[in-house]
Amino acid sequence: MPEVLITRVLPEPVLAAARARFDVTVRESTAPMTEDECAAALSGYDAVLPTLGDAFRAPVFARVPAPRARLLANFGVGYNHIDVAAARAAGVAVTNTPGAVTDATADIALTLILMAARRAGEGERLVRSGRWQGWHPTQMLGLHVTGKTLGVIGYGRIGRAIAHRCHHGFGMRVIFHNRSRVPDPGLPAGQVDSLEDVARQADIVAVAVPGGAATHHLIGAGFFAAMRPHGIFVNISRGDVVDEAALIAALQARRIAAAGLDVYEFEPQVPAALVALENAVLLPHLGTAALEVRTAMGMMALENLIAHFEGRALPNPVV
Image (cartoon, rainbow, N blue to C red):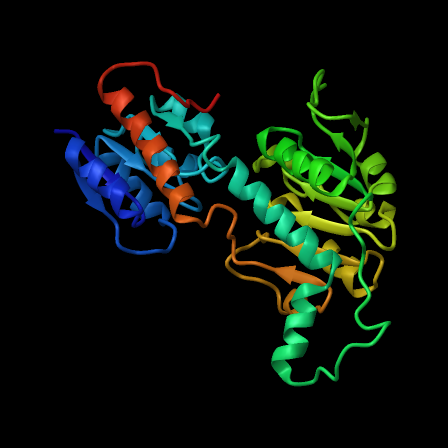
């Protein structure tokens, strides 16, 4: 029976299904794996089911040039914690779990849009503090989202799902920027040529690009300077897609109205300056945090493991 390491505790139905097919070791820590742990995993198991933050970088593969493990079946759609080229060079395939995360992540984007635009986090803090003095006509005025312009950066599955919700739910006009042309956006949505076009035209910006070197600090000071003063910025992709210091500066100076974040550049560390801002909505990476979603992700990762050991084509290879 193949020996498989699962690097974090997963929902029980996933673990039960895994144990029925494999000799499973479950790592009990909730922290990402260190480089030493990753090297040991490559040497000690036939396959690994890793997840966010597990450091399967080039130095790990350099330490284990002939790994026993031949598959990293990633739990999650994002895989910027894995050096795919280094894995491939070492003969290790990489898969992920697209599709299972789309709706849940888009839902969190809508949560952040509404919370940031309507100052919901700030309002809840006011009530909990005991300082609320009652309703009045100009209390905590925010942005009315219906009919506004949404700008989506990254028009893949999740970007499309966000656009669909905003257009059909709130009558928003949709524009988007994508690295390749999108012949059928699925909505009356317009593709624009540059990030600056999105910043200048949109009332609300949602970032939904993959992580990795190609998108590191894709959004920086120039982007925030181009946004409208009442603009809302939302990131549900990866934290390091955004220059966090530039975002903090823009929020502090009120160059943009508010931001909603589910991810952070150096998570789980969140800068004190960001935490202190009333115009920032901060969630603890809740994008897929629903039991049925996490279970579906785990089952998809298992399908990749099963296909690998049965010698079949991998359902979700990372290209």
